[in-house]
Image (cartoon, rainbow, N blue to C red; front, side, top):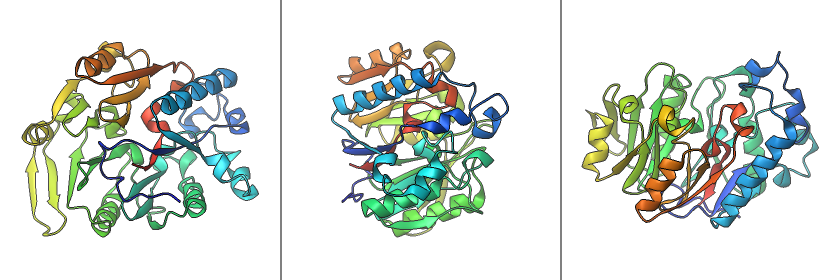
Length: 311
């Protein structure tokens, strides 16, 4: 049984995470289908799986239990047949977000992912996790655009893969789950998810790209009273005593913010972001880097491949 009651405490140790090790579905990728499945290039399948297994081992090394989609659904031939035709099921983060009261199955913006959240619904059924809502077909919001802050706040990005219906449904779910505040961050046009520009790795430390967070004021809504105020994101973080390790993809490498926090200041990400990892360790943390030359061809980092289940 999975207990999601502490999932909004983003800085608590990550006990269990949902991942998907691909099987035959990667053979669906070719030059004609790359755009449909949102891959940058056709990966070497053996290399992709070696890197994926290395990522799983890194989480296990950090004390996080990895729950695999195919293992949970091993007795569901219909689900397995569906997955075999969906080349990017590996990126589980976008498909669902767990709340203290259960799962929200999210809404995908690209055709090659629409319908995929229903598979996570089947996983939730097997694991005993209630489903609060399903955003598809009208709501658009992906999990890379959602994070939590200190147990009572949900932070959501208003980006290229989000619409008003998705934001409204997420707000209703957050309120139903007992959260107190929703911070909506407007993103630069072309921004896919906020986990490319802001990832919290402790209750008082974040990886962030300040120039990309300074686009326009965030909307901060009290979910109990309905009161709304606006504030620039960097000012909000400063007022909440959150220190920032500045990241820059040109300097630090692609997906430099796309780390997963397994416990406060203990992170897993791509190995080329050495400066970022050194900064975390300089602040008393621990960082594990993994290879990603093939994994990155799916346009995602370790954060994108993990759907937190339990803290």
